[in-house]
Image 1 (cartoon, protein in one colour):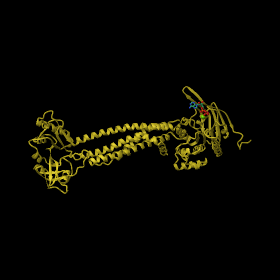
Image 2 (cartoon, rainbow over the protein chains, first blue to last red):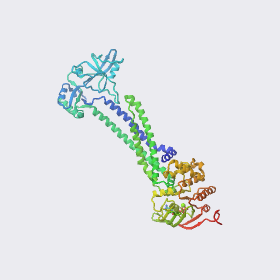
Image 3 (cartoon, each protein chain N blue to C red):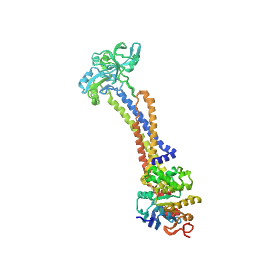
Image 4 (tube, rainbow over the protein chains, first blue to last red):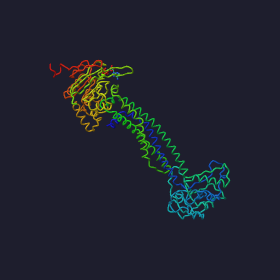
Length: 398
Length: 238
Ligand SMILES: Nc1ncnc2c1ncn2[C@@H]1O[C@H](COP(=O)(O)OP(=O)(O)OP(=O)(O)O)[C@@H](O)[C@H]1O
Ligand SMILES: [Mg+2]
């Protein structure tokens, strides 16, 4: 009955109902669509990061310096670092070399990169195996190829392990193929297309003792930040590096943290948009409720004369406010889901191949919360005013 | 408690305070109305008719004095208790009908039953029976805007009767109606009176007032005359 009457009032004033709820529609629309997009971006990024091993970090020269040569490390220092810096388990040089890679008539330009065991990229295998300790110890001419390289070099498909591919003048035997990575928003390919033992890489491509980047694995992942500091300190000591030379590191936890802090910032902005639109829309709802109550003063007086109690009048107007704000919020939610979903499909999914289920439950909860807050924060006062009207004055009201 | 009195007002005063000014609207009113009586209240403008009706109708409390409605002392009840008394014991008919515009006749009549917490089906059944009583069963699904003034007032009367009140209160019930329609409403009141209803009606119109069996006249907040209606009534002995 309350519901039915409230509905009748809102339907009777369609235009007013619509205009009043526009603020809510826009507010909820903005919050929900950003929520949907943020959700799929976050999912996509964590998907990408899943391909990174979490027990290792990379040290390389700081980006903002002219002369990388001065920051070069010595290959021969790596074993010293393993021996002297606590928590460091292994240290291998990393590097990449663009080469024309060929199998039969199939050619492609790919990066040969140094790798070790466990491998740099945390991807499952489609065929064969990863580089073995034995391959590394003996600097064998073997390689694990990426899915991308596999598709180019072996268009006919099938298991390529045991086949020989050529990179420049070198011949490598394929021992494994990495599965196709599920690309994230970042679309980075951790590791190269042809991963060869770092020992082989050093033999073929490192001239002299200079290397520019090294990958360290640790025993305890929880102290990676401290270990990174200790390793850089040791590198400086060993080479007597000048003060203005800088190094930087890359590890999964720090990267994930960076990404997360971006999302936290986005979330705060969304919450602010939400709060502002909530207040603006709520004031609109309050205003229209007060207008409505004013117009219906005689009606309220009549209801009271007939015997309606305070609580019954209060309830009637609270339900009207609830219906009004729920209408706006749910229309906003529907539009937000549609818009967020569309943008997601057109851009994010196309770009990254990553499909996330829309966060229906969050969207629903946000919407309910919005509607409830508007109803109680901005509908309660008008309803209370209506319930407190003096029946005699209300009946006399023209 | 099985008093035959529907209303018993004893030494009722009502003083309105506006700032430092005190307006004595009622200055010691005694009025006893038995069950089944049909009373008209008359008096010049400002004499206190509305003030008295508000007190009788439990919309307001007297400043001093006591008021028993249907045997119950209602002069010192709080707002919610008064609302309950209005719901159970009183029926209001207004000059301007005061129907809910968006709601059909049946739902308008059923409204007091809703506030009394009666289920939808029973509400509709009783509202329909009451509409039948006022001769408007065939208009149950019409909105007020689709009804004539007289029909709207009948719907309002049905709404006042639906909870079977002890007293029916009407403030200028024919004030917005033409002479013919007024006569219709008056014959409906007559029928209700004949059926045993207690009716109290405020009016400016002497000819309307003569439909009642007793006329109480107010002047400056006091009852100055209280007479049985004599003459043209068929059952009065002349
Ligand atoms: N709320 C109020 N505040 C102050 N004075 C009031 C109030 N209501 C009524 N009065 C005064 O009380 C007196 C009686 O008023 P009341 O409305 O009862 O008269 P009435 O007989 O109904 O008059 P009318 O025929 O014009 O309706 C008047 O002097 C009026 O000005
Ligand atoms: Mg009056």
